[in-house]
Length: 291
Image (cartoon, rainbow, N blue to C red; front, side, top):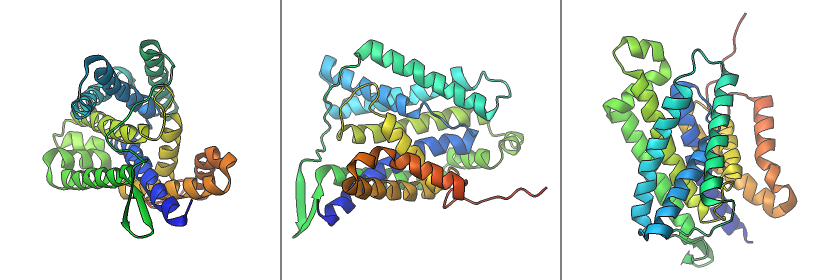
């Protein structure tokens, strides 16, 4: 595979990891919860789109809108019934709660749709290749990923900067107790953050599904790589997560091309190295506690 194709495909896959990393970071910045159920929630919402297409004959874009709505409701559901009832939970307790939600949703997906692998196609194929410049090849899927990622990132920038709800989310991220004193309904902000995160997650999952087979475990590896991207860029830095996703995609693509058998462990190596060298990530502020 030529260098240019490895570069473009790596950046496109990295954009997917970056988007999925955003789903993790938005929740973490708002409520300090590392949502280990994010991958399974995105998988479940993707199956909803698959279900309405195969069973009811919905066109893809209508099924996509249905899955976005379902993802938003699912995010609010998980936050309200799993996270909110916890009284003064520890970090470990919150992690265990999200893992419990992951196991529950994974079991429901296996029961409803079985563990059989299904082909799920989206309108953007990675097999359709364009050559806009002689010697420069880019797939239809990669173009769609770059365009969708740009739209989402631009929307997030405008949303957080110019909308009342976006400013409320930023205030809650900085200090939730002060935000509550100022009259911000932090419970609603938390619920919206989970819904927002879930919608971004299923969008990334739909794009990733074009490169794999749909089954209840298809988002496990992408989630680990997206989490590695979030750790690499910094769990408190949205731009850092996007850059971390790009780095992860390039590392995975080039390292996987040179050493195919070692490709699955790339994400774990990145997580371990970053946590050892710079736990806060490359682009987040690093605080040193003085005693």
